[in-house]
Image (cartoon, rainbow, N blue to C red; front, side):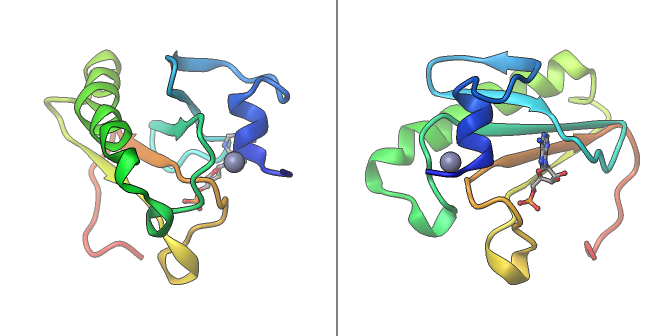
Amino acid sequence: MDCLFCKIAGGEIPSKFVYEDESVVAFRDINPQAPQHILIVPRKHIESINAFQVEDKDLVAHILVDVVLKLAKDLGIDESGYRVVINTGDEGGQTVHHLHVHLIGGRSMQWPPG
Ligand code: AMP
Ligand code: ZN
């Protein structure tokens, strides 16, 4: 499958991971929207939230409970605040069709998003 994030997660495209384990990798966004902008990507190819299966529940919990929180602490943005975003589908602004969680912080955010 010709998927950018599968290639990054699989090491086919060399990348510097800020975190990795058996189920996810995390790396800096190439076009950061804030001083800290990390993408957390499951190794498993899941196209979007719409493609979640029941068996993905542990993976989703792992990403939020373990990985987002660890990275927010490591980056020193857990107290100041941050944003966690999963863009989904065309109107959601998804451009890479391999599910990924944006962890964005290090500046004040506005609401509503653009
Ligand atoms: P989304 O628009 O939610 O699908 O997010 C895709 C993100 O992937 C964008 O923020 C891009 O800047 C980022 N991106 C695209 N290619 C790369 C790459 N090779 N390495 C790191 N980030 C990338
Ligand atoms: Zn993929």
